[in-house]
Length: 127
Image (cartoon, rainbow, N blue to C red; front, side, top):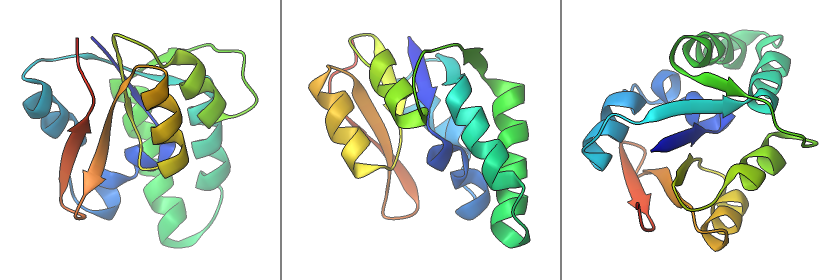
């Protein structure tokens, strides 16, 4: 089982103090493979150069992604397009982007997202 993480999802541990990996494993009752497209890392790198709280959170999210996820090379203009291209049966996309959630659900992927700013929820069939 392959779980793909979006940049906004990788910020959750720092914004809301949620252990996304433990929560995902509890939701799926399994230990999946975690991955991010190279475009997600590039997006985080751009945001990490900002100052303040967002910059700190993003640098932490980037380090977390580099430690816990494999990096996938995908021909795409941006992170959302890369995740959409990777979507399909057997993949789960973790994002809070409403438009992206709808697109990947149409492609057959399940989606994990933040609900009520405190817990993760799963939409779709995991097979």
